[in-house]
Amino acid sequence: MTANPPQTPLDSPNQLDRASQKGDRKSVVAAGVLFGLGFSGFFDGVVLHQILQWHHMLTSAGYADTTVAGLKLNTLADGLFHVVTYAFTLSGLVVLWRALERGNLAWSSKVFGGALLIGAGTFDVVEGIIDHHILGIHHVKSGPNELAWDLGFLALGATLAILGWLLLRAGQQQPTYK
Image (cartoon, rainbow, N blue to C red; front, side, top):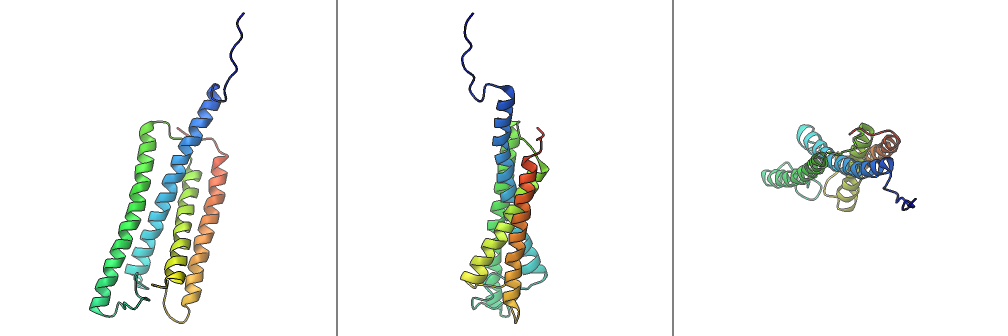
């Protein structure tokens, strides 16, 4: 009778499957965060810049949108902003696509949705701190209550990120689907 060699943690099919799913979950999380970053940026650019016209990228940096030259520069800056949000979204698509091509994606709607909210919230917080407070290049809505609008934007971003984290954690406790 020969002795069986000791099993490594990945010798068991269940352990191998769980390890595979954990790696695939990383792709789901990464794609969700990237999509969230992109979608939140698109929402900001389309809704706040174009539809409501509350601000453009440089309206508080001395480039008013009330002059043709100022509007041209702000439109260019808005377009470059959209290029960045497009790059986030495209990167999320590439991550998800590659994970799907590997054929062992461990999908969870809660994990993906949570990651999407984390990305959206992170975008709002980072963009809000940098553009509204540190650089001061624009505010959510300029005027007498601009600080309240800016703080509300940060609170929205933090809330989205916290809700996303809670949803992601709940999703990590559920079985995955391949």
